[in-house]
Image (cartoon, rainbow, N blue to C red; front, side):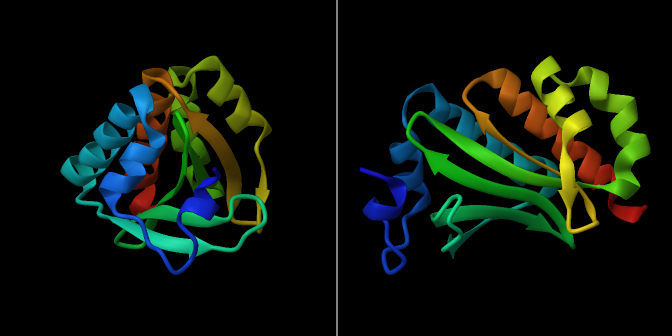
Length: 147
C-alpha cells in the first residue's frame, strides 16, 4: 500500500510511524539524520501534507532561521530528499562538490533551475553514502546562511 493511502490528509503520522514505514537499514539512516539535524542545527521536523502529483502525502520539512534544508519524503526501504541550492552558494558548492559521491556531484552539476533561485535536486537515500551527501549539502546551506 502506498504512503499517501496509509496516511491520508486527515491522518497525520507520528515520527515513529514514519520510521516504521521506512523500515530496514533506511530506518536507522532516517533516525540518524533527524538526530544529526537536531544536534547540529537545532532543526525540528515539521510534518506537512502535499497534494503535489509528484510525491503526494505527508512529508517532512526541515527549516531553521529562514534556511530550508529541504523536504523529506518517506518511502518503503528508503526516503527521498528535495533540496534547492541557491545560486549564491555556488562558490561554497564548488569547494565541496568533490566530497560528494560521484552520482550526487554529477546531479548537482546537471541540476535544473528552481524558480530562478537555485539548482534543485531530488535524490533517494538508501545508504550511508547518500546520507553523508545530504549532510554535506545541509552544511553548505547553513554556512551560506549569511551570504
